[in-house]
Amino acid sequence: MNIDNREEVLSYFEKISNTLISYAVKFEAKKKGKNILVVGATHGNEKVGVETAIDYIEKFKNSQLILESGSLSFLISNPNAFLENKRYIERDMNRSFFENLEGKFFFEAKRINEIKTFLDENHFDILIDLHSVSRGDFKILVYNAQDERIEKFLEDIACLDLHFLYKDEHIPNTLMQEAFRRGILSFAIECGNHNSNDAFLVAKEQIDAILIKFNMINEYNLNFQKKVFSFKKYETIDKIKVGNNFNFLIENLETETFLKKDMILSFDDDNGHQVIKEDCYVFENSEYGYVRFLENFIDPIFIYKDDKIVF
Image (cartoon, one colour):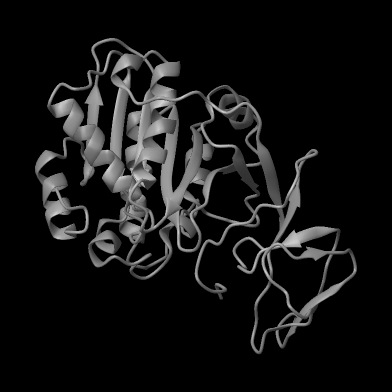
């Protein structure tokens, strides 16, 4: 199947969906075990999650893989945006999982309510949200800094050595937050560039590691390599606030630039001067803004989430 033939892909999922929510497939073993959900196309222009799902689904259908315990589900989060190869239709779904959607009317709201119900009904233990990046080819594990369980969980099975910890106030209303509110262990994987031919292999390696950890599948059937034993971690400090007539006031500012406390970063009509609160590094994207490196890791690592500043 050609992953870039998006009409064909959605037709494929329509035919095989076996849950109450559309564009979702669930495999369930007779033996009880962990219930895992893999999500793709929360951003419709990021095909890696859909490609990963198809690979697993076809292997299960052809008995190349057999689920020995628990359940493994796959969901296309924003099928309409995926069809149009757009990040979203009306509003970024991964910033719109409000606790209460009452009175909020935008295209993605109906699908978000469906996903919330899907999470409630299936009692997932783990949610993995698959993404890709628009610049570079960065491969990163992303998770909520406020979920104390996730670092311990990933230390045991992480396949990537670069970890990004975000705080809810810096990146609000994500699918991961929605899962966290339900007690679901959740993280995202940035699997490389949007156009990478092997991004889905990055996703599969990490998913395989989890399936093996919980004895859900025979490891000899999987392409699993040795996990990494040391990590580079960094976390958000603050967002870059962007208003009318925004301008940086530091010359030659670029991602990875080191900023000292009390430096004046920028000026705009709405926010005035933005002053750096502590020594840190900067991202050029306002989604992430300033970052602090944790522990004694070397060499600042950076990523781009979009091609331009998000207003």
